[in-house]
Length: 252
Image 1: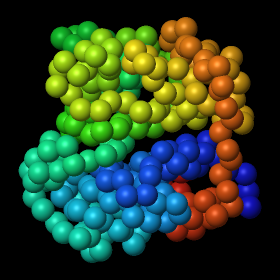
Image 2: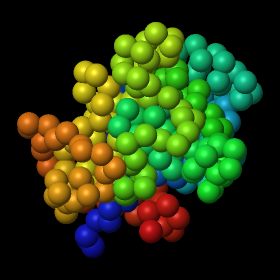
Image 3: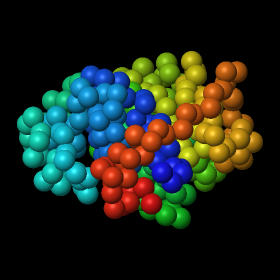
C-alpha cells in the first residue's frame, strides 16, 4: 500500500473525533469522507444529516454536492431544508458540525466572508451558507483545514461563524450552544483550553512543534502532554481509496 497523504491523515484523524451514536451535520468534500469513514469503522450508529434535508443518510457512493440524489436513496427521511435547520440544527439536536474557512483565529472564530476590510476587501469570499448556524447550534464543532499562517491569524478579518468570541463565558452569554472542539490540520490537532484559546494537542508524525508554530499567526501554547497522531491503518486507507473517494476527487 502506498504511503498515506496529508489529506488522508486529516480524514482519518477527523473520523476519530466522532463517537458511535453521534448525530452530525455533514458537508461535502473531506468532512463527508471523514464521517463516512467513521460510520464504516468504529461508529456504525453515526446519524448523518445533510444540509439539503436528508436525515439518516447512508450514501452508497461519494456525493458531489449536498443535493446529490445518492444522499436520498438510503436515507431514513427527506425533509425540506427549512426543517433540517429548524427542527434539527436550531433545536439543538445535532451533536457535531464540520466546518472550514479561509481564516480561523486563536478563539476558533471562522472567516469565510472577506479578506481585508469589509467595505473594501482584498478578496470577497462566498460567505456563511449554513456555517454560522452550524457553529452556533451544534454541541461540538470540528474544523478541517490546511495549516498555513494566512489561514491562522491571531484575529480573523471578519467573524462569519463564532467560536469562543471573547472566551467561553462570553459565548454562553451570547446564547450560543457548544463551541469548537478541535481543529484538524495537515500538521496536527489543536484544541481549546478552559478560557477558549487554541492550543496544540497533537502533532502528526511528519511535523514538528517548530513547523506548527511557524504556520501560526500568534504564539501558540503547546500542551504539556502533546502526543503524536497515530498513522492511518491499511483498512482506513483502503476504504478511502477504493470505496469513499476512488477517483481522488477530494483526496488528491
